[in-house]
Image 1 (tube, rainbow, N blue to C red):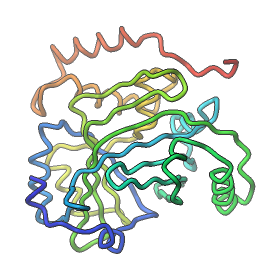
Image 2: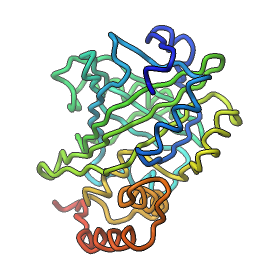
Image 3: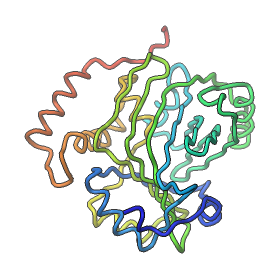
Image 4: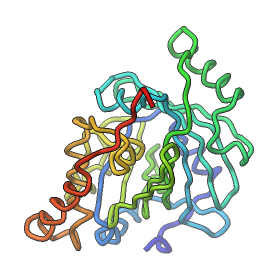
Length: 284
């Protein structure tokens, strides 16, 4: 299906829809339903192609404080919050340090390129960059100490609308890996994460999502999901609905399977095996 999309280059994509300030909507979809969704999108969207590739591998390392303040800010529903990470684009050998600020519904992203050996590190250059951005946003210096916290990996294809500043990213084969607590990892099977990014509220593209029964997630981020599935946190009230939707997809065999019977049995099994979450402790 991806071969049926007209291709767009990275420079064309950035000119059409860089969207460094944007409104984001996130959805989950079962991987077996992805073909039908792509079929309905191909008329209005280009696909990013670089060096003949249409699917790209991402490796992200998120930073957080010892007490996971950035995670808890999201879980608490703070209307003004930040995240920071290093990102490695594997096929292109490019890596960046990124600072993200979400204020109400608008996401702003700031970044600079880094040497690959700095991927997953929080060095003095990164602190200077964070302090400059933070000071411009809040009028005061950034005073927290942050560390590498969690790694996410996935494969992504990126779609760009042919006429408007809209972008869709589709993330497959998502995996979460510990950074602080050993080498544990977790991969939510069947789960595909779709993100819709636009400058404005209200778009015909959202009608396509509704046609496929895709309901916008109230609160979702790969970083927060990873902390839950790797049992790094206990409090996750804001993400309960998102986690339930993820589990429903993980333990179903296709988009038409209801969550009773086998799915419910699998959900209960998951809850039993994860009933004692590993919680970050300030005293550790």
